[in-house]
Image (cartoon, rainbow, N blue to C red; front, top):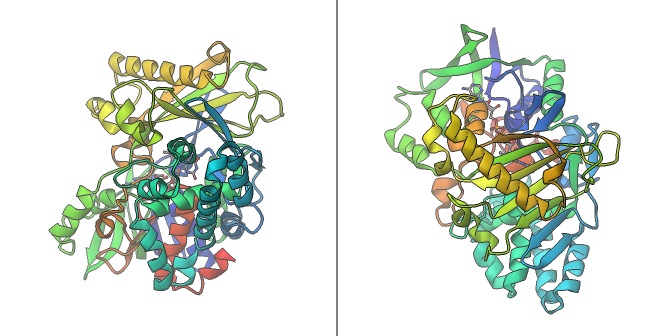
Length: 497
Ligand SMILES: Cc1cc2nc3c(=O)[nH]c(=O)nc-3n(C[C@H](O)[C@H](O)[C@H](O)COP(=O)(O)OP(=O)(O)OC[C@H]3O[C@@H](n4cnc5c(N)ncnc54)[C@H](O)[C@@H]3O)c2cc1C
């Protein structure tokens, strides 16, 4: 059977592209190496409990907001979405401050101005800037090169530099950046657009799923199958073959047997590095292009502590908590301050309890550089040895103690602890060096670090978080961008309306 499109990988980007292309009449086949779909959206089961991996909350899902518009067309708005508190969707503990961030650009600025009255004008301007970024988020797809140029000018600016120029109080700067563990805070490289686009979307509105992130992947797959598409699991793409300068078939290992799949087009949701490995001996890939892709740096990974809590002990908070140790001078130093040392900052997120009441689970996340776990890279999951277990136990203890600052009695309320490191992500999603957010975009080197869906092959496209944007919203916009390269703008625009 020859497909119109083969999609490599069933992360959010792969599934969304498959859904959009199927809806536009193409015969699609998604090929996923794991038994579970979704990549970072996978959940995992331990006993009776299910935990999320790379999904905690999303922004801009309120009526008419950008993710709501996209998700409506993808059949995802019937999922049990649960809005976080509008008077405090995020809470930041930094130095002696404990601050709630409010939804709505005006309210966001006003509530912070009440605490930082001298910064009122700066906060109004900052908030207006984020609103403008939020309003123009679909421009690259709607306005083509004109839309790209305004966004690219913000990609070329430094997020840290912009904050220093626009906010004079260093403490306020830390509060405004303090919820940014959902991106990689790096003074030297982080583009202003990445920072502004993500923060803007959560200021619009913030949501959890009552249930697991895997619901998103399963619902997309169900929609793809209903439209006649094929979704294969336990199917690893082992190589791509080419003829006359085009990719023509994929070799896959499907449930232990080698199979050949043929298609006119290929979309890869794998990292560009892994995609090029599938084209090992290609005469069409110039060494200079391979070198460029293979040299790209990766954003940090995460160490995650998933807790099963004893019944009725810890209250459910309808917001996310960002907590930092008092000795951390700047949240922008977190990577250097804690790599190889003690944990300095955590993001704490809870599952919405099924029947209301107290929390039953808690996830605590902290950024982790791959160098911390590299020495175990050649070991297998669950067989990495005592030293690795001791390393993880120590990190988990530090994370729990820091989270306990915001949840008194946490340590004594834990039933079971599970942990994962960048090595876990590397194993399950193929993320290079266990990166959480894909290739590191560098505001000083955009031409090299910001990729487009196009590849040296006219019928092979990239998608997913390694291109321009990460996160659920970022990847969704990237999926539309990839599909608009394939189909042209017209069929894609309705997904934004
Ligand atoms: C710890 C963590 C927390 C996060 N929290 C949030 C959050 O709260 N909100 C938010 O918006 N974003 C969050 N993110 C980011 C978000 O999850 C990702 O940006 C997004 O899911 C990435 O999707 P993707 O399609 O680019 O790639 P991936 O999810 O990485 O998918 C790639 C897929 O390709 C498959 N694959 C790899 N190799 C092969 C092969 N050879 N053959 C077949 N299949 C293959 C993998 O198994 C995987 O399924 C988080 C990420 C992490 C790591």
